[in-house]
Image 1 (cartoon, rainbow, N blue to C red):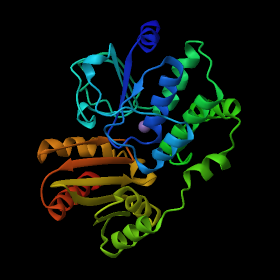
Image 2 (spheres, rainbow, N blue to C red):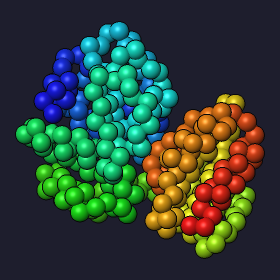
Image 3 (cartoon, rainbow, N blue to C red):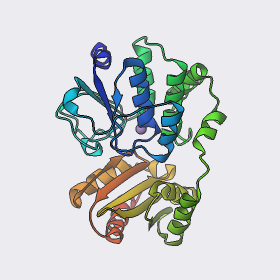
Length: 310
Ligand SMILES: [Mn+2]
């Protein structure tokens, strides 16, 4: 415990997150840099929702940092080294809540809690256990991470809710204010992507479960979320960009209750077809090269094999 705080208190740190950082990743990085100092590496990009936090918290990230200029490198909310935009030769600390891929062997310290709903929650607990006070701004960033990674409090145990309530007290925030912050109101291009995705949607029933898939050129996550809202249990949304094929997956609570784990599904798919994937039980992604329709069909048939008889 002491050693983790020692690492966080170390001088001249770089904080890294997974590519296309989400509010949970950026919130964790913000809190650590605010309390302990350190540059936030945003070279891997910031997703649409998290970008609002840049302005709100006045976060100034660094791009293409020279790793040699830092004494310590801290990696947050990142399931595997492949999800970083670049791999430093030395990593001091990893704090993460994804499925443990066992790929962080090179890190000097690892705090991985597969059952934690969000990385900001882990950061909040680390601070509390070390007796380090959390200020109002940090509490708000922690809440945003917890709120988004729990899909708007759609998941989370009693421990999670207690931590959440503690942070609400410190931040003076209501659920409504968090919802308002995150409800960007989808703009027209997102809505168009959802409509196109729905137009091309195909589905298959396997017992009482529905598997649905489609492809779009952008906003895969928004399309996948809409398909889950429409009632699908396992969703695959493919896209092809810059010669790369990406599949975004979502799984309903119903199929998760049957023991299906999308992050594990994608990481084992990576052994079968050349590619890399991972993530959470209900939300994960897979990157590879090849025809998007083919890859989607492989995902669908593997998923059917996995849920057959469940
Ligand atoms: Mn996260």
